[in-house]
Image (cartoon, rainbow, N blue to C red; front, side, top):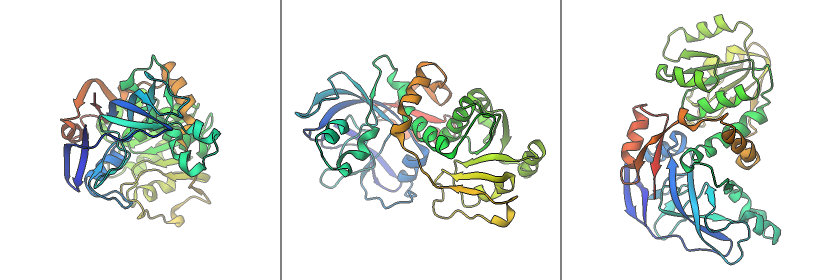
Length: 339
């Protein structure tokens, strides 16, 4: 089968790779489509992923597949089911970084594994494999991964009705944080990002937008929000991006650094803060937000078209063009048709 493989940093190819063998608790899925992720995929391609990577590796973790075969102990997947977050597995000389940009992948029946008494380390990470409603558009469903991560993260931070939130960054995750905050009833949601994303940010729920390139953007924010923000989320993760906005955080507020652009190099000077604050380190859990995200999609509260060009699909063979479109900021996230 074909897959998008990073052979080494800077070298992305579409190559023939082995089809993953089917285990007794696994469902084989034909992967229909996937969405690009700047936070992981681009960092892997460019050799800037902050954790150890063995190359060559198969990209992709925002994929939707359809079950075509099930293992002997599978009880919760049926042939024809749509499943989120499927990917291929490692083989000799080939690693995977989730492996969603491949023609076939596996979903693991974590429910059955748990019920049969297998240790949690064997199935816990596979709770991301969830069955989707059959009427859900697979193209739009590729957004579920980003939406689950960001909804779980923001909920754990404590967003609530009437709260004020500042989001640094207007990429896929930044826009998602803004959308979730608006749906949670936040009073004001400000986004600092690229000027070309202003319209999209306001459409998904932001109340205010500021061009990150402005020399005086900090002063502009302080002028509009003199009382500061209850919550700040840095969805970029540059060395100084969180510190730059720290003076805008209310005393007792919470700051979360979600982005990984320069992971491990974040610098915060607490003397710049208005008072004591909390630095959020609670992470996220995709599975806990799955039901809410699916419900919001079905209610049209989350609309994938603000993130993806649903009618502009890149092919697997043209996946390099998809990432170039992301780099040029022609799209927030690129949608890739696999099969």
